[in-house]
Amino acid sequence: MRLWLIPMIYLAASVACGLTLPRIEQAYFPLHTLNLSIASAQAYLSAVASGMMALTGVVFAMAFVMVQFSAIAYSPRLVLWFARDRLLFHSLGAFAATFIYALFTLAWIDRGGSGTVPLISALLVAVLLIVSMLLFAILVQRLIDLQVTNVLQLIGNKGRQAIADTFRRLDEQPADEWKGGTDGGSALGPVTQTVTYSGPPRTIARLNVGALVRQARESDAVIEMVAAVGDTLAEGSVILRVHGAKRSLVDKRLMRAVRLGTERTFEQDPKYPIRLLVDIAIRALSPAINDPTTAVQAIDQIEDLLRRLCRHDLDTGFVRDAGGALRLVVPMPSWEDYLALAFDEIRQFGMTSVQVMRRLRAALTGLADSATMPARAETVRRYLKHLDRAIERSPLDVEDKTSASQEDPQGLGLSRRRLEK
Image (cartoon, rainbow, N blue to C red; front, side, top):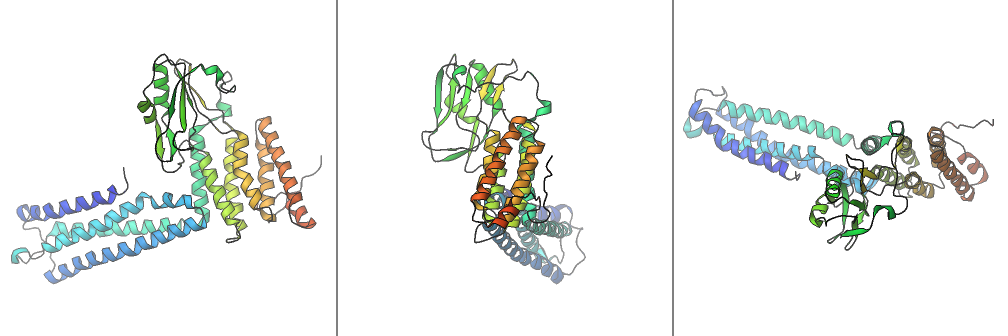
């Protein structure tokens, strides 16, 4: 549902109720009136109508200023995420509906010189006003939640959910699980069909895996996704190849299984929350902001995501049908890709920050100790040696280099020295 439809539905409902409900009251419930003077009722409804419009302007001006400020302080990729919060649009709809229905009710006060105030309509305005105030309170709380700790926690939660939805834990992995495709696709059979993209640049937001597998099974083929979730497609980009199909698949039907968008999403893309956390960290390390503590807080979330990833099977790009036949191959990032995404830019931009270097070392040491696969632990140790060499080449003096080489989960707070065995 497009978000602009939400306030439009509120507006349409309020207009419909304003045109019908007072007439129904007058026709069927003429004796049900509010024991309130005409002047008082008019003042009450006028205050509600004028106040709701003023409140709408103030609240949404404040909301979008806060969103813009957060985008500058955190990452521009978070602007649409905050601005597309459905609560904003429901609040806008409720405020406008209260304003419009109050005007309609005001028109029925002392209708035809009756000297009465419609009871149900007046009470409905009061209910709408209460609902609007509740939405206003929730909206203010949502703006308070834009502080950096809550934003980082929210992104981390999105990442944890994406990991749980995308990967299986290693302790749940069947021992005889088939792995293939490491030879570049030569075992998939001859290419019988290639689907390319035509149009303005778009990003792959998600794949309908079930639809792709069904189409591949119908033609006894294997579909190889060349573009991964999160990739941006340009004119002529190859999206997928079909291998060994007995009959040609319909390009449009294949494309309907690939959802395109203007930006990346958290769905099926565990890299994206890490990307956002890294963006916040390196922005905090920029000379304009110079806030290494925020970078350390971002690393806290990044470390947690990587610890979860290292306990999951990352090689999930091979999808089989119910009969066990390989039907879909999707490119997936490796453990090395995740490490590079998580730490390379922070290491480069935080080279002169002792606090960031100590936190990076603590994160990498913790990953090496918690990794259940020896190959992944060894990869982390190699990256740790890379960090040591980077510290040695940094412009820090000797004492700062010694301090930067220590582990400290707080950045600067409590050093952990490893005892020699």
